[in-house]
Length: 125
Image (tube, rainbow, N blue to C red; front, side, top):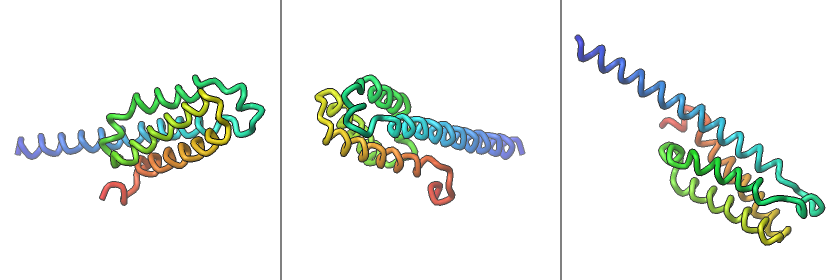
């Protein structure tokens, strides 16, 4: 009987940790997506864009990269990181046209990560 109770407690603990991790990563993905959408769209404001704004997205992604790889296929995680780095590099070299394309790819990649992190029954199966 003791073993059954211990097993149930451990199972409940694992379930709580998985749900907490999913909710936390959903929050972080929402935050990164909001930061990406807040980046300038037009050429006039692009000229004043600091690489630090994209660095914040990169740093936030690196903070959760390991725990995200536990629930998201690594390919999607790598694509997100590559698009963030692409966007950052185009900001640094002040290439507006490539920046817009990279920013849109970054937003799409972050949306994919968010879809994986939102608790759904299909994500659990």
